[in-house]
Length: 421
Image 1 (cartoon, rainbow, N blue to C red):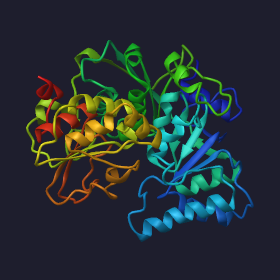
Image 2: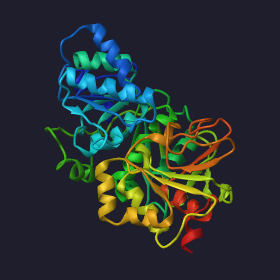
Image 3: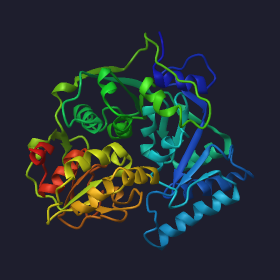
Image 4: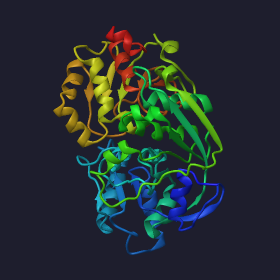
């Protein structure tokens, strides 16, 4: 019996011919990363180990992205800790504000995570990079300290679930809608400690930005990682960016899966996850008309250039509803710059949106867009738990960028066709 994509990558990094689900292994890690929330804890544990250097100063990334630019003294101290650690241990990939973007977007964009690799980060949405055909997963800060010290980490090999998308997605249906549809189908713990392997010809109709949105939200179904095989589109995207040689890995034809689900994407509509779970998913029409105080387009889920293009298409020549505010936050400086060059930023400003420097900010209720009691937000982020974006009495609906932009124009939750018609 063959191995799944996740199993083959882990076997290669454990230097064994084969691994089995449930098996405990120690594997080589190609690259690791932490942000301003998780890094200080990892640094403390690393210092306790007492080593004079990290395992490889070119394979550790430190990215201040959650509360940066710093919102208060406490967050400034966390960012300062990152800066000092990077200097002390000569970490190559430390990115100061102005060069830093959201780590889950920026590291792939810079060619630092590659097909066939093992990548870990002290943040749950590290699974984003599985769209490149990498085993990419979030770990705790103490585990990250061990990786920084040794370049290795233990894993329990996950079972793999395979999700096959058939057909061509309907208009306005993006990768965000597809993954929300899956989470609504299997539930927020439906893939608990399993690999979610995504496949099918429908992926060929999605941009790389949309594919990243799918693997990004694997964690919202409880998965250990999300992953896709590196097809020609992936290799075309990653090859000119790659900072080192890589070897793509593919699943064996006779691989065994814990579960296989197939979806006809031609019948999937634009959807929203209603408060307060990514697993409560309904077609937009079921929630249409809900008055909305704020719309937010950004985050590691939907802050990429394609997301901004979709939003600008709807906002062009229109204005944000006077009783609604719209926040647009490009995920990285490179995306921000490209959006400027394409005229997208002007479209957002002319529409009455607020455009900010790259940051996670509102996604975690950290700063810039925190919700007050009773306020309603339509967000392109990944989570809508109680209190996620601010007050416990606020409510968050998750959507793709088209729905968020249409909602901003009408001031109520809306399908894009309501605006463009």
